[in-house]
Length: 249
Ligand code: PGA
Image (cartoon, rainbow, N blue to C red; front, top):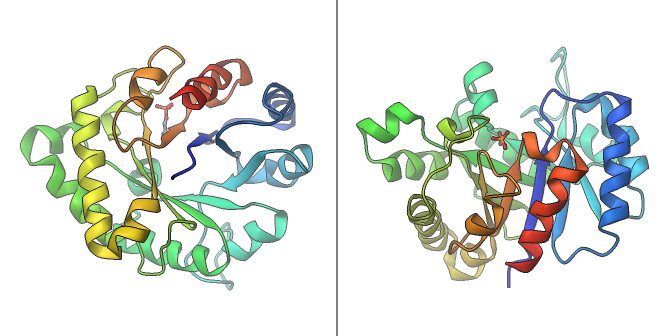
């Protein structure tokens, strides 16, 4: 059985004042029926780990470097994330693929380093609207999946998030059939590559405009094991009903 996961990606949002949202989340979910992960900006990691100390909310980073250390100004290593108390890292988010020219090969190298450091990697994939209209979406997803996921992956250290680029921050979401098609396909591909044991234990998240009012419908789709949530994870009052919908799915 895969334990469901509600993950929040705060992106470049939040200063110390936002830590109150973590406290509110913990108060609302002292003993959640699903795993909870919040990935705040790097500047808040240390304080977020302290805020959630001994509680059920895991803290994660939003990126790390593929190298373990060295002359990489402005970058953060996987070991640094571990050192500060982070337990996971988002890798290959489309905003990093687009804004920082990260390729799937880059993402795989980062994921290998992060997994070796003991972090759970949340690897993001997704097609653009142009790609969905012009090509077979499953070809795009299949290529991103095989190139971005390292051989060192297991059910514990790999989570895959399907995030259609056109659904992120747009208020648009794919139909349940479109989400189900991609998630079933990713499950098949992971089983083929890693065998049924590992392939069936990797959690598959959907991400892109998940909100309190569409969460239940999305969580009812086969092979959707949770969500990676951007905007609606910033306020505990928005994330809370999404978590509850996942608990009831
Ligand atoms: P959104 O972002 O929920 O604001 O659409 C999702 C994401 O980018 O992970």
